[in-house]
Image (cartoon, rainbow, N blue to C red):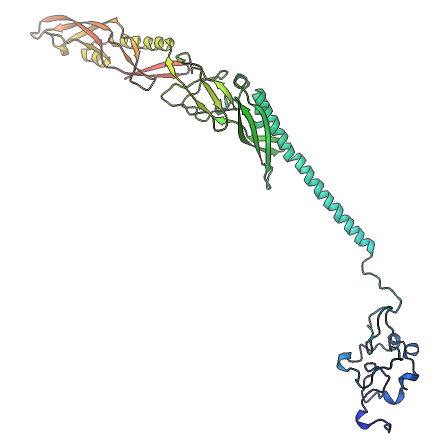
Length: 427
């Protein structure tokens, strides 16, 4: 039975003073006849919202059933549900069914001491990484720099053997025969060597080192490379320079203290930076003046290198020329003697093909250096003096003999200095 004081068309509306979202208006639960008016019923003390009415799982959301605009909550009425301290109550707001009881603090999922431990571990790891980087730089770049400076200092002192040890160089190899104490010790050394910069590869220990040094009053810059293995740091590309190419038209030159001279065959010989004196390559040549060889970055060259044959050269060549013409004089065929380099006069009444000759060297041709030749390996000889007796028959077939004269014919010879010996080849 309906209340005669409530209009029939408002039967489904909630009574005044009751929260609109607290009870659904279904036919099975008519709440309006049983609930007194709001002024006579303080809701907060008698009806704690959270324990008695966990309505969220069973009732629809508040936006789907808003409170009627014609029935505002009375000013003196307290909210039907408890609110957190400092929070304004909202009419019709529903409590969180998963919220903790009022007055109970929510415990964090992870204790704070766990976060302190994690933070400390991260900080410790960062410190370890920084320490490793610092140690690597100390033992890496600084280690390479120290070895590079020692290497430069050894060169500046003329201690080639110490520098070779740091660069793992074998001075017995052909291209390294100038990298010795005997050679570097007699040269003018570099001064003020400084490692100006190091650059280490990210993928390996290979380190490029820029250096500066002074030589004969001039500042030079160079680059060396270092690497590291299980034995430590070493110079993988040292401060050495290839010497200037020696033309095949000259016999070469020598450096004081070297085991042998430099020739056109020594195209890859290297030396430490310095100012080297230059000497004649052997006893068979004389060097005019006192030329110097400056070996440095982009500066090595040979100036005023003027070689002339020595008296020992001429004596050795003359000896071999004498031996050659003495051998020619043993020939008995007129044409064989001529082919050997002796031009004999022609007989007047004898058939050359039916006669023999006996040649005598009256004066051996003298050796002279060719003035019009650009090579020290060619020379010319004087005419000399020869005599011969031809024996045979005359044109009538009668036995006959005739005296002939002769001189050196056209001949040339090449000279080669091989193992400190003169070798003359006649053409």
